[in-house]
Image (cartoon, helix red, strand yellow):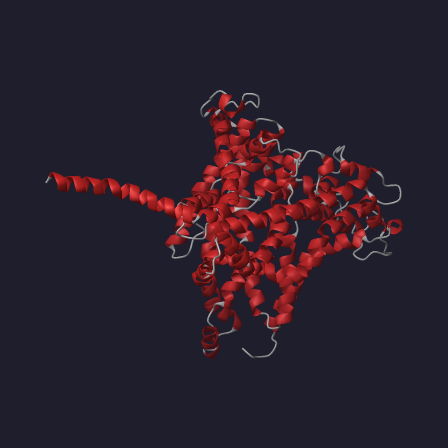
Length: 290
Length: 320
C-alpha cells in the first residue's frame, strides 16, 4: 500500500473535508454573527465574515443578571453533580465488584433491569414532587446520581483489577474502605478522569430535567435560558429571557442571542481538543462491556 | 437405631443453620463493601424502583390529593381510551417513521465515514477530520436546536437569508409539517454520525493487515479491497449495532423532538414521550401520562430483550 497519492485519495480527502466543513459551518456562523459590530448588522443579510468586529454583544449579555445567574447556576450544578456522580458510581461499583459478596448477583441483576425498563417520566415526576424537591437543585442532581450504564462499565473496570494487589493490601492490614481509598482509586484514576468528563458534559448540557423540576426562572441553568431566548422567542415568555430580549436599543437581539450560545458552548469548545482522547477512551471502555 | 436417627436428625437440622451462619459470616466479613455500595443501592432503590409503584397510576384515576394508594381503581380504561385516541395512531406512525428514517439514512453514515477515514493516509489529516466530526456530539440538543433555528428560521435563518439574496421566496422550514422529519434526521446525522464512527474505527484496527497485503498481491483495486476485506471485517460490528438499534427503535430522540416541536407540526412530531409530557405533566392528567409511559416502556422492554437475545445468539456479548 505504498503507491502514490491517487485520484481516489484526492476525492476521499475532498469529501471528508466537505463533511468537516458541514460540521463546522453552523457553529462558525454563530461565532461570526456574535462578533459582528451592532452598527453594521443588517438582519436580513447573510455574511459569513462580519464587516466590523466588536465584542458589544458579549459585554451586553454578560451584563444581564439573568445570564450571570444562569451561568453561576450551571457551574454550580455541574460541579456538585459531577462530584456526587463520581462518588456514588465508584464506591458502588467497587462494592459490587466481588463475586463472593452475598446478594451481589441479585443487586447486579436489578441494576441491569433498570437499563431496560424504566417507570417513565410521570412516576419519576410524582416521586420527585413527593419528596418536595421541586425547585431545589437536588431535583436535578439526585435522580441522576449515577446511571446503570456507567455503573456497570466502572464495575467491569474494577473487576479487572488483579486480586493479588488487594490480597497483599489486606495482609498489610487494610480493610475494604482503606483499600478502596488507597489502592483502588489511585489505580482507577484514568477511569475517574474519563467519567468526570462524561458526567460533567451531561450536567452542563442537561435540559429536560431542569425544565421539568425547576420552575423558578431565577434558578435556571444556561440550557434553559438559551432555550427560552431562542426557541421560545415570539411566544410570550414573561421570563428571564424576556428581560434580555426586550432591551434592544443599542444591541440587536440576534447578535446577543448568538453571543449567549457561544458563551454557553465555550467551555466545551475550549476544553474539547485537549480532552478528546479521554472521551474516545471512555467509549472504548464501554464498548468492551457491550 | 434410635441413636443413629437422632444423630441424623441433628445433622439435618445443623446443615441449614450452618449455612445461614456461613452466609452471615460472609456478610459480616464484607460489611465495608456493603457500606461502599450503599449509596448506589439506595439510589437505584429510591429513584429507579421507587417510581415503579407509580405505575399503578396507569390503572387508577389518580388525584394528587388522594395519593397513589387512595385513588380509585379504573382498570385498563385508560389504555382502551388511548388505543381509541386518534393521536395514538399519529404517535405510533411518527415513532415508526422517524425510527425507520434514522435506520435507513442515519445508521449507514458512520460506517461509510469510518471506511473513508480509514483510507486516509496522512495521520494528521485523519486526526483533524476526526476531531471536527466528533465535536457536535458534545453540544447539547438545546444548542443543536438553536443552531437549527439560526440556519432555517424565517427571519434569522441563513438559508432564508441566502434565498432572499437570490430573490427567491422564503421557506418556512420550521413550521411546515413536510420538513419536520427531514430536519430531525439531518440534525441527528450532523450531531451523532461522526461520534458513531468510533466503534467502527476500533473494529477496523483489528482487521488483519495481512489480508490487505494478500489482496494487494492478488491485484485487487482499492474499491475491491474495501468490498472484500474492510466490509467483511466490519460486518460483525454492523450486525450487533443494527440489532441493538432495533431494540431501541421506540427511542427516537425525546429531547430533540420536544425542542423542535411546535403547534403547527404537532401531527407529525408527537411521539409517546412528548405526549406523556404534554398530557401527563403540563395538563396534569398524570394517570394518562403514566399509562402512555408504561405502554412505551413495555414495548421497549420486549424489543430490547429480543434484540439482546439475538445478539447473544449470534455469538457476541450482549448489553446484559
